[in-house]
Length: 345
Ligand SMILES: C[S@@+](CC[C@H](N)C(=O)[O-])C[C@H]1O[C@@H](n2cnc3c(N)ncnc32)[C@H](O)[C@@H]1O
View 1 (cartoon, rainbow, N blue to C red):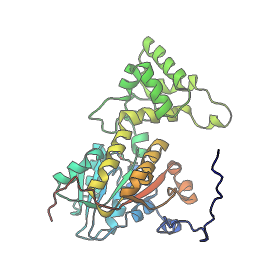
View 2: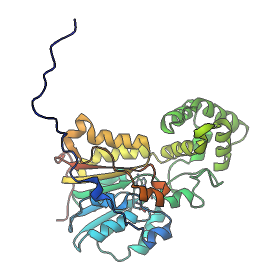
View 3: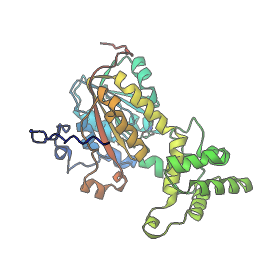
View 4: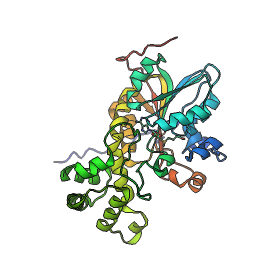
């Protein structure tokens, strides 16, 4: 028998809980222009003003740009820091550090380091920076990595299959495509690339590579388009886009790095410190959302915006690559004590 007790109506009128602390419209800067360094590097920073405002920068605070790239966000953060402020900027790709040597040379507030952000706790300890006021992660690839020659990330340029953000270490896309067993390729294509025809494509990859290895991005892109022919509105996106993205995520262990960062972040931030994440891929956004909004996550984080912040019409018009960007902001509620990071102060 179902419980038929009448539902009690509350006398108080319903008011949504104020999760939003700032009106998102205030975060929109209609006049943001990438500087000449970003243009020369070939990457327009995404949600640049919004993400830097989300860090709530204090003049003398200590911040980390976990994914420096061409330094578009890094320079925005620096522009708001006073002379005693500090900014640690990391990237796995050595080329970005050489670039930063040009634009950031001689700025005593800037500390550059070639590193994976999943090591953030040991890096802060090594540099004796202590807990920091905020960290920004602008995930994925820069346009320079995607379209620059010799990196093997794009199906639009025919070159050796590589896809490593750090070309000095790790397995390449060639290794995965030509040596992974079929069942692992199926999982990669179905669950990471989120392409439904994973079974069919993985089978064909295994058949083709038995005849001759798939050496270049062109070899793989041709095979993908033969196996996954699109019709109707699906024809607008090349199926290779998703497959290449899935392989890239695996080559660089991007999901694992993000998971480790989310786990370590509370141990690296001061109380009320902020973790700001821009993601471009649904699996990554889900990871961040779960971290800030799950029952467990809510004990540690205040999720400052109920919905992710996305680019404005104007940004979308000016920068097509921003179309899938989602920005989430977590503010640390309480300090997680298990890790004490040494500090110079
Ligand atoms: C989207 S780009 C950042 C662009 C930058 N915000 C700008 O405006 O120029 C992402 C950068 O993060 C780096 N990256 C991605 N995952 C990383 C990780 N786990 N650790 C360190 N750097 C990473 C990539 O090499 C790339 O340069």
